[in-house]
Image (cartoon, helix red, strand yellow):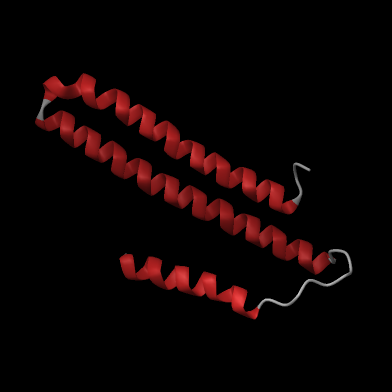
Length: 105
């Protein structure tokens, strides 16, 4: 899994090397299509990361509660807080995607 993340980060980061300088013309229709694809990838990565991290956080909290039921009050509140913060990052990813394609401006 760690190698996959490293390879994906390398591939996605290396595309900036091949970037062209900005043209003086306005955004063409093909550029709008690429922006839509970029927004879809942004949403997909945000959802994937949020889902995986929420699953791990919930599993760890439930494992802790199963091992020590008396600690439920001490584990439950931080778990809810962490799940809310993780979900806020997913919503931030959606916001970035919508702003990038110009849906909110």
